[in-house]
Amino acid sequence: MSYIETYPIQHSTILRIYSEKDEIDVSPDYQRNGGVWTPEKKQLLIDSILNNYDIPKIYFHEFNREERKHSGVTYSIIDGKQRLETIWDFIENKFNLSTDFEYQDDPNIKLASLSYNDIAKEYPKIRIKFDSFVLPIVGVKTDDLDLIEDMFSRLNEAVPLNSAEKRNAFGGDMVKAIREVSNHKLFTRKVKFTNKRYQHAEVAARFLLVESSQHDHSKLIDTKKVYLDSMAKNYRNNRTKLVENFVEVVENVCDEMVKTFIDNDHLLRTQGSMVVYYLFFKELIEKGKVVKRKSLEDFDKKVKDNRTLAENNYEKADFDLLEFDRLSQHGTNDVSNIKERLRVLKDNLIF
Image (cartoon, rainbow, N blue to C red):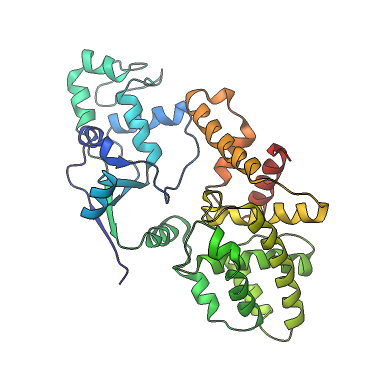
């Protein structure tokens, strides 16, 4: 039986969590990577802590005894990675407080531009206060990692749980087509995300929506739940031949993707990337071109390296790649998001 349990982690002071950082996996497979934080955003978080403001909750996945023994870690970060790493960076003197920082408990104390070490030397009581700040960390226990995604869909996007499962109950020609496409080798062998909660069917539906929206509206539309549900209902009956044509086109594109990607491919680790790849491969087919997996692998690495560069020197980072990174984490079903990521992908690939 799958379950999920949440609870507040007790005594989660900054100093304690920092002392246990080696026991925390900051980059598990299900980590939701956020956009790169600017120096100003990092300084604002430390400002909030020093001035006793509430900060957003941080979520940890707690490993069971066997998982701890195997991995050597106690927790992995589900949400809040940037906040924790910002705090750790401040403790390690990687950035200072802002030049206009004001200590609200006593404005006469001048902390502006100071580092963590500076505060420890000049104002040890304030350093102790910072170290003793209790982080709002929520522990998550589950025997099904997919439930973590479901939980955050509810909390962060207000997406109803199991929307694909509900859509499956509509029945009809399009729902049958979604099932057929979701059984393609692209999903059964190549993608890295599981199908425990109909994730494959959700992506298959988005592929089919690309084709049906082109037929109905002569353009791509948002691949959101409301449009997926509408497609399933509009193509429920009496349009069998048209649905079969959509399936043929989609499976042809999927066939090409299968030739490029490896089994359980980390490049296909998220649902949000799938429509972009689908549109990219569809365009390749139309133009009679092919792409090597190495080119896609190099692009993925380029995005990650650019993220690291931005963390150290934001001005030298490539804006397009930062935007691709940001858009890959937020609102991935918006048509404007999809088109922009597709553009950046095409602009950066070497054929």
